[in-house]
Length: 161
Image (cartoon, rainbow, N blue to C red; front, side, top):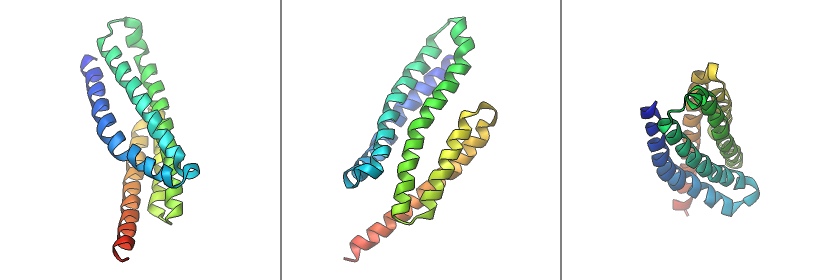
């Protein structure tokens, strides 16, 4: 139990610093400048992700260091509640990605955002969480392809001018 808690805490710290700030928060902040109404929800999702990741780090360390039997018995319920809370910011970011895909007519991005959100909802349900993880992974791949296509389109229009 201690190893799992420490691993979760270390992974969250790395994830929080590198992925969330460098890519997600900065990207949604730039989109927020362009259109607050459409893309502000993505920025809100990244801010909530910061908060929930910090809480997840504290929870992982608490579970790792706790020798209380009641906490160990309730740890499965605590982990499921954490899954539910962590899905909320991701779904908010999926809404912003869907809107971005609509604006740029990217079917990969809009479809990927929907598939990713569905996968996250399935990931919350413990019995089929493996299926949800696979569906979310496929959605993430589609989102990355869609974002890459938009970036290439944008870079092509800038260099041709």
